[in-house]
Image (cartoon, rainbow, N blue to C red; front, side, top):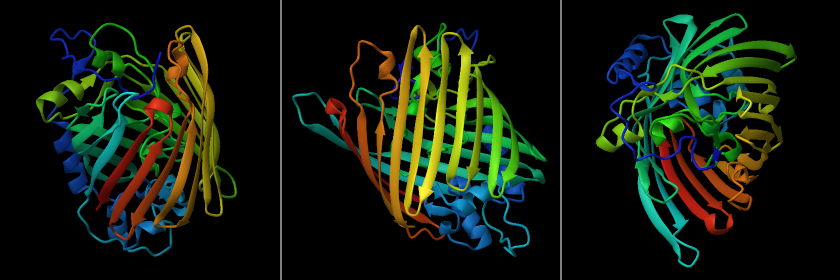
Length: 415
């Protein structure tokens, strides 16, 4: 079945001492390696990943690449398509800067305790994230790393899960002409990056996972699950081509494998975010789309076997200050096949932010005939200012979904 709450189901089980499939990787080697690359590489940093390092390096504001941080404008998409490179001949002078950025945020949320009681309110530090990325040593090689020494997220039962020390992204990309090869841990979908969303929550159609199988703990089985917006250790090969005017066509294929790259920092995180790897493929993920700035049309497909696969069509677009995302498709897990969709619209009259709303299908629960959950309506507010070389963010989101209704507020800064 699909897990509709997290891309990796919650586990409080400790990994077994007999590890026949999932293997613990070296924990204290990856971080010094990334820091060493970041310190020595000539860095051209990616505005596509909302790093203010790039604004400092080229003496521009965040608004150069963003409609409202972290949502990209046309210049930001083109900057990303060039492989983190400025337009040739535009005279942007590079300045030396520390190749690191920090993203810190705290969250307050409410959740229903039961149908007969009021909502429970709490506040917690949900993120401290160290970010680095850009060109590494040679023009055809780039890297990107997001490491969270503090990472807390709510479980379905309302408790908090500590995953301190996990990597969000950790990958390198090599390019040769129209071809690009990426190795590391990253989100499988490329047409839409949920990390750049203005809402607090991700669309369920991207984060709901096809459950994994096999022996082992709940954590080990969860790492075998698949969702288009979830991160997995993977290898991806992509082909990019300009097809007409400012339109670009991208086609890619990826082989994700079960695992998570992490440097867990406390006892609970050694269980919830242990460094794991399993050398067998989850399946094959293929994607193809055309893009011109914020407008795109495409589709993706994941196939493991006849009992586990999904396919979605995706479109994004803009008309003046209005932006939208539409996703529709189907998924099969075991004997059950179900449709899934999400429609989202945003009004962004100023770089300081705007409002949006999303209507979505409870994609995970539709594959559970014993669960009847209404569709969700999620209006939200996103403010980002001053959007110069640093940004303060305020997000407010309300989920209207019967007994699952909840409110979330997040305050954060990126500098």
